[in-house]
Amino acid sequence: MKHLKLTFLTVLCMGIVMFLAGPVCAAVTGECSNCHTMHNSQNGNHMMINVDIDGTSGGSHGGGYPSLTRGSCVGCHTGPNTAGSTHPYVYDTGAVNYGFDTLAGGNFKWVVTDDAKGHNVKGIPGMSADTLLVAPGDGGLAAGCTSSCHSTLFAPVDGAALNTGCEGCHLEPKHHAPRQLAGTPALKANGYFRFLSGHDTGSGSGVEGIEDDDWQFTNDMGDHNEYLGNAVDTHAATNTRGFAANGNTMTGFCTGCHGTFHTQLDGNANWIRHPSDAVLPSTGEYANYTTYDPDVPVARPDLTTIPEGGIGVAAGTDMVMCLSCHRAHGSPYDDMLRWDYSGMVAGNGGSFSGTGCFTCHSEKD
Image (cartoon, rainbow, N blue to C red; front, top):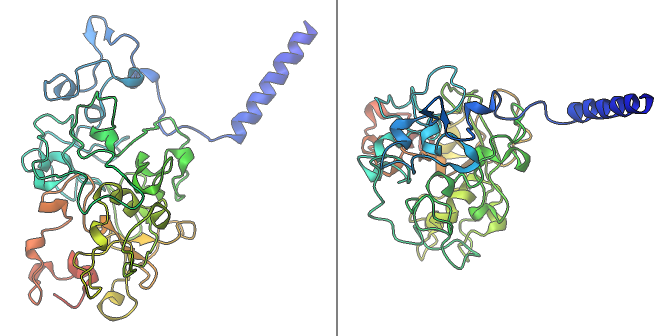
């Protein structure tokens, strides 16, 4: 009996030490039955979280989800975003007030009726395949690739060969990974930034960034996501972006499908499309962008030096990136832009002055 007591005390102490040494808690907390079900039935009722999405022919497949979850990605992340929401909603079947109840990535609401408004993702009822996409994405394959990993996010969700639908981008959702500490970069242990992994960030790698605690439901100059950037020589003779060049950046992730789209130059080494991961010049009109605007985010060369509450924009150091102009999911505007591009009129910005394109190009309005 004495031996058993000592063994129990030893195990208990080891458990306490391991608990204190490890992360405080996982990213998702609460009863397992909130998200999982053993048999998909309880008292004669199904256990689907969102029958309007997953119970329709346009939804995923109506039951039997991976990891015994009670719904598909879309089913669990469909709804209205409100103050204090405990998880993000990326699609809303009701009215959506852009910029007020949408999160950092925007919303798929507008893509259902117009595929120019964002990414066409399988699993959303009413969504159609992109009619304009030509494999392997815009601008050809990224450096180091020999074939396109997937030419569309609209392939059958249950297909075993490729990740598609939501998991075409959020490759390995790790809802039970250790919670990212506030104000620190999301790394591999956290499932990376928003579970974005693979693509041009490199095999087995992912996007590093600092996640806002409410996914930018509320946002201002000191309340927003922070994105990692890695400036490359966009005027280099090779004019390519390799895995090493982009590293764990958001631009590196985007160029996994969109290739060298934003590094294409003409014969005189002039950009023919807007560059990405290019450093904002410290002179001229660009030097006026000093107060951070969450609607025109920039990428940082180093996330470990950002103080809590964020910092302003440092011309000559910070970079324009893919998400400086686009929403990752969708927006009310063509090309999933963050603002109404038709209102960006050089020399006559009117009510658009100081916003959108004119945030960086401060002398053009």
